[in-house]
Image 1 (cartoon, rainbow, N blue to C red):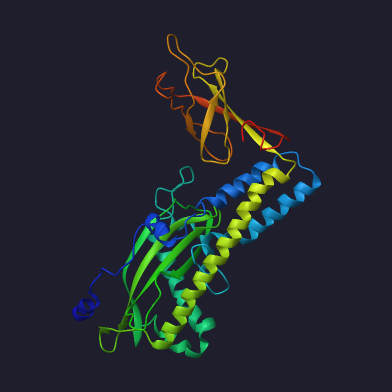
Image 2: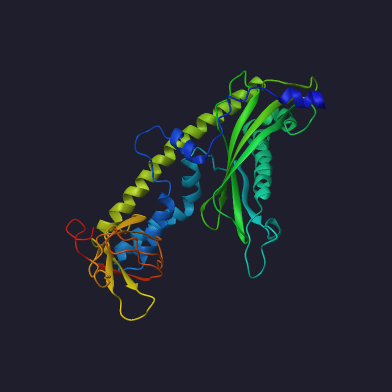
Length: 365
């Protein structure tokens, strides 16, 4: 057994693992990148527009956009990163997250989250199913040899390392879909395979975690590392090329959806938004300021204070910045520009007005 472990050791400089931030920057070599939050922002904008007074044509247009997003959100979310989402490529498809998958801190009154180790178990099960897809669908003529990769009989695969980036605490009840892709194009001399797994929450429609897997190709008969068989390399290289095609196709779809989203603001009766936030001090009483969000589609928005909060002997605050949630009521603190000190423990009431003026001439667009 000691010899087997030492056989797995080797230079690690070629590993391409890293954080998802670095990965996103390196994978996107084409100038203008698509906003990584485009899906959540698009869904929030659809929800916001749905609450307005629209005519029948506008409602039909909004319905078509919503159906397109609901039917293709996983394909667009994962496909733009090169993950294949078609039949057979989903290692786990809407797998049920059980109560027992959570940490012990999860109670009926205080919700926990899925245990960190369980994310790796999801990825492990999905990886086996992803590889079995080559035996059942991609290359059934060599099914036996593909299946042997998961057994210690001939040439198999051994996990050398796995790195997990946790994106948000997924919790019960939920369903998780796990996808795998090749992180690097294999060569005929490759004695390892680099994979990346994407764990997606179906409830929240966003990645819950990413796993980076470094897998060694191992010959159990000779107790040494070995290269992949040539036909396996052929199929894996074809898969990698399919990933790249999927990435390009999804980028085009996303650009079309984003463009349609922006045009929606003009086509739907030339509707523009004026979102108001009212500051209510802890001491109760009347609001002391009204703020207009001049760019509601952005997460960080410029604020224009119509009546600024003041204190005795202090000047009025100038234009500030506020971090706010895309949907619903915002709750935050005003960050002043240094002229009037900090405003603490304030409450923000949030509502929306709509009108039918042209966005190009609207003062707050």
